[in-house]
Image 1: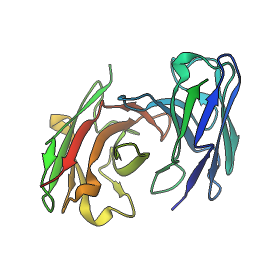
Image 2 (image 1 turned 120 degrees about the vertical axis):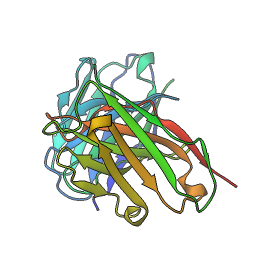
Image 3 (image 1 turned 180 degrees about the vertical axis):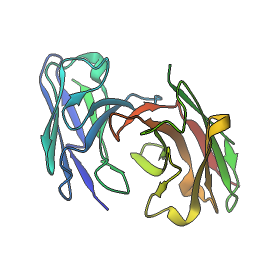
Image 4 (image 1 turned 120 degrees about the horizontal axis):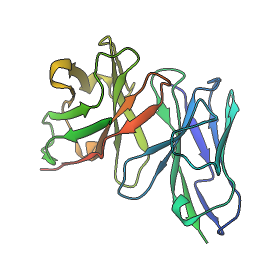
Length: 107
Length: 120
């Protein structure tokens, strides 16, 4: 089973600052990675797939990068609407696995 | 418009079998490349993928829960069903169904989720 490790667990950032979230896979998953955003009381929402492809209606402030085992989600300028928990997920091999999430707060 | 909606009991007793339904609209379950998964989330915890059924009726399961899970679909009724046998309080959480579309094996649409509590 592929283990996905996200860092940091929590992150507090000032409005307008750049945010960088990390996700590491325990083995090579090529570009078979997605990022999801989950706000309290809501279902997850896909932001990025294929490591770097922005999903429909996702803000241009959000960027995904990486391949192999190391991946990054970047928010170029933090806004209040970005406060949420972010999960990475690999779909390279069965079983699918998620990271433990990064909680993003605003200072 | 693609939608998914979960339904099932809110409260289940330990050792019983939990049956959850996912009713879909806006797409057909036998469309090439389309799959439906079940994902759950214990209170305050991370997302956990449980099972997937694809357009050809192939099925895939979580390693740790495989012996207790069964996923099936009824294409005519636009429904995907998940059963979880011998439930315990550790199965408490919100259960989501999610679609995998034809352009990626990631989840492009989620249902709103249905909460399940396992308690006597």
